[in-house]
Length: 622
Image (cartoon, rainbow, N blue to C red; front, top):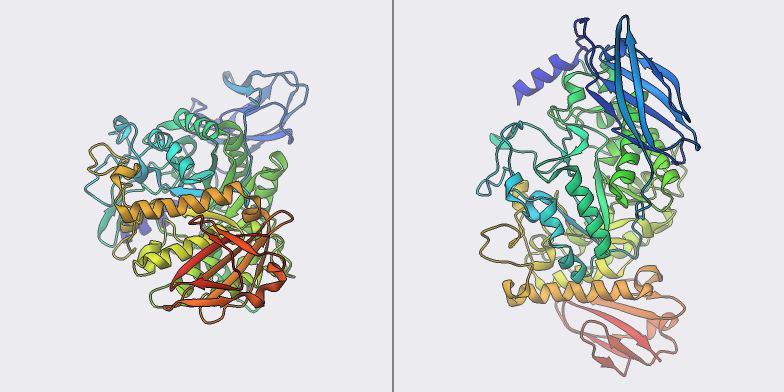
């Protein structure tokens, strides 16, 4: 680790300018193409190659104007501002660069938009399934590893190496997700991570997680590459599933091509010596915070091998924003989950969010801000608090609800729903709390079942809360078949392969025959609730009314003009006959109910029997 830090400080302290060679080349243009008919007619091309910044550029193409060419410290870069008129036609633009007697012509495609679904967004009507592509399913073993990549390893017996899962494998199991009741699939990042193995705590680890990009315009070929991703998205849409992509704006991998040859010294956040973020959220919102504490939180590096990008650099900002728009248009994704949201520059994030929403008004964006209170969480989304900075992010991952359920209400011997009630009681701070994405676990946490002590009854209570309260529920792969484990001793323990997703697996838990009785019961429980939620708008779009928990009993209602559903949970260790008189405001006029989970009918609603550690979902009738 010390050698890595020394290397980074040495590499990034200055931009090493290349020798002014006689030959000039253009090796890369990003974005790799663009389209006519976009709402924003302006685009900035990054042109890269030996001495590409020393060329004088011209364009001759009807409807396309080269407004300005920018140079930076490193002569290997040029940034070209183009305006594309609504009258422009699809075709190939010729970028012509001249220096002395040398002329270079670089073709650049201007495409027609294809009209396929994209930017559809996810809403409270959706149920998101999160998976790690490397650990979910392997559809093409021939792309598991490549000798020409910085990490040429693939070995399923090693929990820290790549295991070979890919986009084809994911596509082969979309029907499984559809049957479960999911309406959207979110994979951890699929972009190229041509990163070397890193020594973390004495263990060599690969970048199978995907959070160290080395080329934004290339889907990792170990996942199948760009065409496999296009195919995956099209098949997901044909199956009735939306696609969420994982964005990373805060940092890139140390092997990224523009880190190896940076355009300018301020491309990344520079420090006199290596400085890690404190991982503390408080200085960002603390009105009494020191500037150094805030600076370390936001501009310190996440880890030594992930350089921290300086989004105040205007060329970098344009690069990141245009890539986000290009991704939606090129692949057809529907929503963005933004990694490490709170560590980004917030004005940049507002600009990026707005650019996406301007082009795709229905798109949803929800960032990861791992905070522990409602006020801090509200800072990063549209809120009603008088903060000096106002975020325009429509949604976010609801870490406060996650903590309320898993680490308070249900953890081990706790038997009190009040933390969840109290968290939801503070929804007044948000512009729209239904846009928050709720969850019980993910790839960075202990698995839900282990946190609650392998208690199957508590498992069902938490899943009931997740799928019946406000927000957009998200579930981590394998939770539906009772996968478990803790992060200690490593993250790999909560990122194990999905049984049946890989050639040679002895068990196939994608199929009922491969699951044991308890696993099938869990799967069917999730399926029952998820499909009921999907098919009944009251469950995802109806109003929410909750009542103070008393003696382990927590009752709330989802209701609209056509239906009323009562959710009653008993987290205590004893059976209770719940007197419903207190709930008259919502139950008046109803005389019967159907138990959604069992289809049993209740004909007397005055007393509702709740066995120990039980969740009831009752559709009320007259």
